[in-house]
Amino acid sequence: MDQTIINPIIKDRVTFMQTAAATHGRITTLQVTLMPGGGTPPHYHKNFSETFVVTEGELTIGLKHKTISLAAGEKLTVEAGQAHRFSNESSLPVVFTTVIVPGSEGFEYALRILYGLAADGKTDRKGMPRNLLALAVVSKISDMHPAGTGALMAPLFGLLSFIAGISGFHKKLLDRYCKNQ
Image (cartoon, rainbow, N blue to C red; front, top):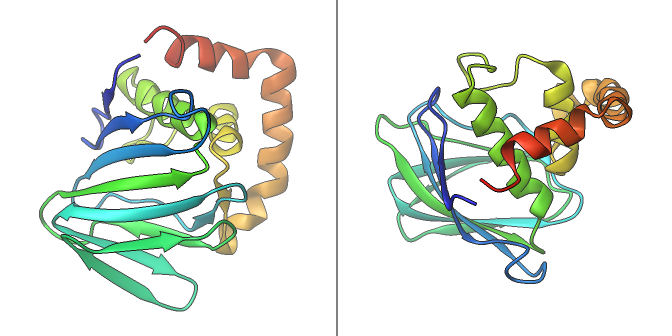
């Protein structure tokens, strides 16, 4: 599979430095280039911690009661279950490494699906899938659970993910974007 994927809509780039498969599930390490204005909505992961190490630029991490700006050379670990979001609030790209422990093949697959959908013109201008089944699949396999008001969508995403599984849509996404790339 390609080691580097690029989202042509939002111009972010992810390079897979260490994968869950290659490390027998111990770790996933990604180098991310996040463009100005990019980032994630508030979320948490149940099954892994996420450490952000900034190489270049400034990364903003929002936690429950505070916001932290990380500059080059600084790092922060967000433990499993801790709600967070990250963003690039600057006018320049930010380059950072994300270390996920234990490694998560599902998280890796979710990124490949998101970027693949963007390349196929199946996302909105922010890079989010237009198809709610695809969004539900990505949320489930990435272990990315909405936090804050987004948590109200969790039951719907659960149902949609179930439908995607029984209809074969989940497998179709994996086959299209994650196998033999």
